[in-house]
Length: 188
Ligand SMILES: [Ca+2]
Ligand SMILES: [Ca+2]
Image (tube, rainbow, N blue to C red):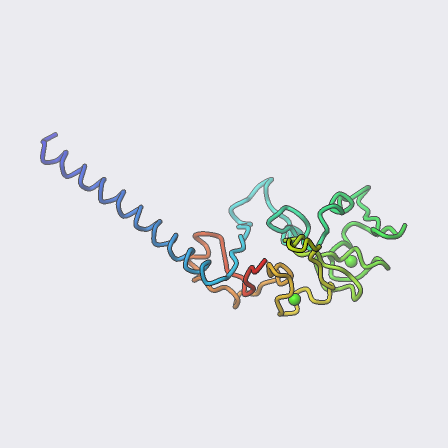
């Protein structure tokens, strides 16, 4: 191989590396500018690419970034694991089929089977950022404020059910990063 040919290959490789770096930088700056404006980035699970045994169920949309069922107080989380495919309401002896948890219908008389939805009138939703400091307070809201279009939690986690028209990034950018922007900013 001639010296000139080698030189051309090196230049071509360098150009490709440079283009790749610029491409990544462009997306990084796009995401950063969106974040700087106070919006919150929420990961989207790409169900198609997960495939096979890792295929996520519809129920995964109820899991927040902390790995906790949305709206559940973290200390209560173990009680939301199914026992014999049943759920025992937190504050009573009532038991319901586990599939009735977060099915958008209030089954437990104590309103604890719908931690992520607004189905129970007297329910409680614990924000993703469960504690606020100075003074330290447990951050929770009545569950009828979940997905009502108004940001109630300081981190905006009560407005988790986003429709397509709330995506602020373009479709291609969203797919690339599997992110979209919620309309609630994180002020916690
Ligand atoms: Ca239910
Ligand atoms: Ca709300």
